[in-house]
Amino acid sequence: MTSAVDDLRGDTVQDATARGMGRALLPLGIVTGGVVLAVGVQLVFDPFRTDVPLCLVYHLTGLHCPGCGTIRAVHSLLAGDLLLALRSNLLITASLPLVALGFAAWTVRRVRGTALRRLPASRTLYLLLAVVAVFTVLRNLPAFWFLAPVSFVGA
Image (cartoon, rainbow, N blue to C red):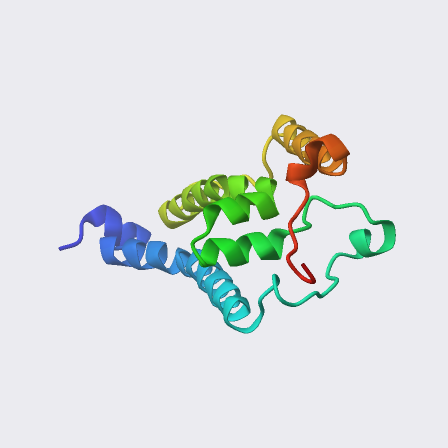
């Protein structure tokens, strides 16, 4: 049964629900693509047995960038080894739950049709940049050797 307001708007509750579910397709596609990519890499590539110089910064300078060890961390997480994942890249592994929460919040807002902010507040961006910069500096200092990524290739 439709009301007069629905007739004027041309919407029904079913139309609104269908649009909301349609808005969930983008987040669902992103998650599906990420999972397929991660599992595909997990099945074909073992970063602990194959040495592939993926990081141009490390290859050219010998310094670990904030992303060094990310593939090993994801590989370890998919294998169920949280400690090795944390040892491979602490920043990425620790940020995954926060990214998942943010992604879930974005998905809910998108399905409900509420306004979405394109970027976080500038304070948040500066704080994230500072955390990444401090992490990068610390992981390259000898006193913080435990923040550098692990590699068992050739060991």
